[in-house]
Image 1 (tube, rainbow, N blue to C red):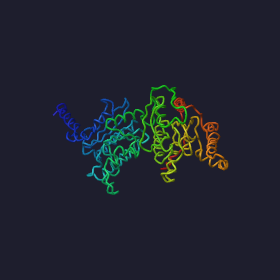
Image 2: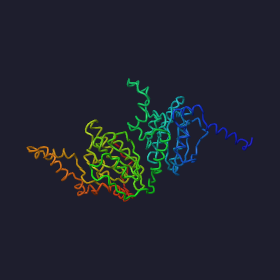
Image 3: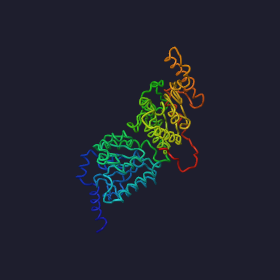
Image 4: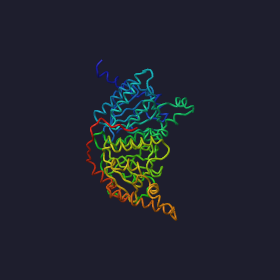
Length: 491
């Protein structure tokens, strides 16, 4: 039989394989989930997907490449309609192939995770398959952006792979867990269900999912937006055409006491008010976000004054340190907004607080990308040292009336002026007077500027302009680091 006569048969067999099992696809749809190829189609530019190893369909994963806004992206989407998307040797081989290609070509990779787990009949081969994917994701970390979409079950070692990714997005259909509800219930003696321990709301609150969405389509759209904001690899820059006036003022803020929610400041500063907040339900006294200023992607790390007075918590420091590290590997500038009374006093052992504070200070001081700090209120103790000091910022600005001190003004006044308070005719008025004296004479931002620790005391309205100017000036920043393999991050 000639090759020409074989072609129709080959096409028919290929179409049969690609079509999949109709009954299983119907179950996927009934669960409110898209199929693997539909998810890929939502993610990539129209008609840009090129599937690899398509005839190796029983591996339970769809792999290939395409474009997002014209830029190349690699993708693998676990196919729950084929053996529950279970991971085995063939599954891993397909995934590792596209990961290798992403590394060689310097293009981002998106993982769409929806799997029942390891192929039990493969035993140790399946376990090794998971470990190889995790190891490759580790190797790619800091080389190309990795985005993980949790769109179905993602348990055990798969949950670890998701956490290695730079950004993790979970839809309401996703479940992220190490131990399932039966194991947790048996261990705790309390009956729990999958949604309670592994649903998108639980993952968001625990910090396992940086972003959550309602549907698969929304998760794919979020991945598109993220990829569109990030550099294609660690040798590129995330700079795009300007779409907003760099000289635009933000007159709604005219004093330090006009800020209740720091996210309002971030929205006012970024181009067109558009930003992505990461970990919004996790450690809310710290806000982390991605946005653009003058077309340049920026990572924002900010204290939230309406949550625990912006105090640094164990988890708040960890989430900020994670974003600072992410920004560093892709040379994304960091802007910190500082309004904190320092470390949280209660709620965690002092050792944990010390390690968390060390993680944040370590991550920001090690960061070699442009760093700009804006003190919008109080910068007390570790709040100043880890987020606005010369150790962690190239440029430091302060709004009028800011307080920079080792301790808050009331505590400082008590320690320094106790003798002047004793015997006062009006103790309350005298205390307030001495607190103000300390703030004005010692801790005021103007005094820090005179000493060179603050570059300028600026009007809040020109904050966007000053940050944009600083980032432009720092765009060519280069630092010579001491030769070493890597530092030992405090965890």
